[in-house]
Amino acid sequence: MRRASTVIRWWVNPRYRRWQERSSTEQVEASTRWMLIAYAWAMLVGFVVQLLPNTGPGRLPFSIACAVLAMGLVQCLLCTGLLHQALDSYLGTRALPWARFGVPTGLLGAITALTVVLVALDAVEGGVTIGLALYGALAPFAVTFGITLPRRTAALALCGYVLVTAGSLAVAGLPWTNVLAAAAVLAVGGLISVFTGRSSAWYIAVIRELEEARGVQARLAVAEERLRFSRDLHDVMGRNLSAIALKSELAVQLVRRGAPADASVEQMSEVQGIARDSQSEVRAVVRGYRDADLSTELAGARGILRAAGVDCRAESDDAPLPGPVQAALGWVVREGATNVLRHADATWCTVWVGSDTAEDKALLVMENDGVHAGVRDTEGGRTGSGLAGLRERLAGVGGTLRSAGDSKKGTFRLTAEVPIGSRADDGRGAGGKEPTE
Image (cartoon, rainbow, N blue to C red):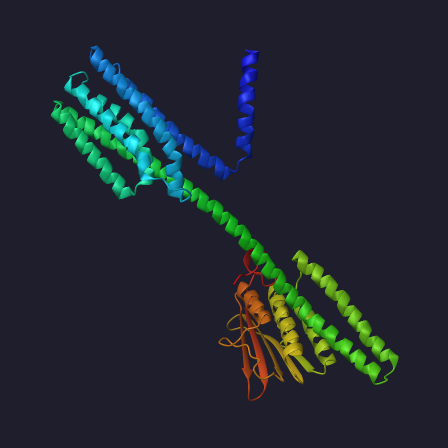
């Protein structure tokens, strides 16, 4: 006993480990395939074997019954080999030539003919017994061709086989009541076999599609995170780099004009401070926890724009706003100030923040002059990546962003509206997820 158990463990353990190494999808597919094979063999062994004890006395009838069982076993072996190819053909990974069905079809015809001979010899009685024997021989073949053929074609082929078999049994002298019983058992069994094979193949296909969808979802999550990072990095670094470039240029000009060294040192000290702040902000962006504070962004926009020679004024109706709303509007101020520095020769810029109590919305209007010719960002015009990112952020909290340029006056206006009841965090929408395009 100990040696037998050792042999069993030696044979089972490696296979069990290989099974555990498979993914859940692979385990489901493999178990479904083996269940189809087990079904075919169970029907053959369970129903065809019962033909032997129910066959009348005599060497010839018993020999014919043994021949039916032997051909059924051969057909089941062939159909088991075809079953994997039929499943692969249904899944679109392998082609299954129709010629491979020639031998199983011939064996099914021979089994049916020998069963009819037994009926003609009065060696077997009972329509149910005959129907079950034919069902057991048909099951392996029906499972396979039910997967391969279209549903309508498989149903027509099964109906034709049942009708031809029922007619042959009637000609062999089987009473009509037994003929109807055999035909009913054969038809129901054939439908079960076809349905079992086709539904199992469909189940495997659905499992594969779900696995593929998981992969696509994972890739989309990675792409979404890349978009979030690129957008946040643009919003964070755009204004700071513009300020660094501006102050560095101002320090160079002061040196060239022979201004006192303290003035240049002050400008470069501010550059150093902005650079250090940028480092901290970039780290926060990577972690995904950075918040934009409206009051901080307004103060920063005023300081940087005034340093660039732009008269920046900010006004507010002092209405209290929720934190998420302030965060969303803070991003608008940051991107708006960046656009003024990069894309405009502005002399003034105004920012107004207030609320519309009637519609329960927070409003932010940012306007400046000195817009370059051809630079516009309207609903029907060109859109930059910064304003496109802002629209995504505001859409995540149920807000909107409108931009309009007046070529005659040379002004550009940015209008943001955010529902005050928004529960989103930092413009990321419900659940803390970044909005996607």
